[in-house]
Amino acid sequence: MNLDQPIFELPICDVCNKPVEYMDGRNDINFDARIFRVKCHGEVQEVTLTALTMLDCEITVGRAFVRERLK
Ligand SMILES: [Zn+2]
Image (cartoon, rainbow, N blue to C red):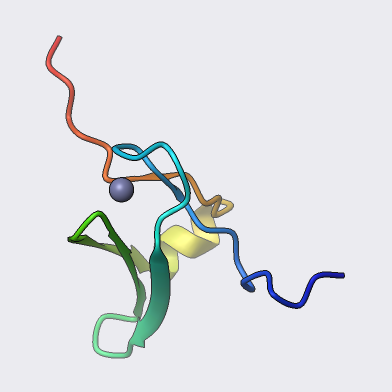
């Protein structure tokens, strides 16, 4: 067991193709949601998950900073 590991898995940054530098989460009581914040390559991205979303599906840590790709 490696105690240096974070509690949750860090998402992979889609720009750097490696785990993001920093991630935290806080509860938003007003909206009954949890806000995750990731920081990487000088950018910060916030993702809000509502309680309903978390009940409906299994949360998996994916990729951060995914750009919308033009087709
Ligand atoms: Zn990055």
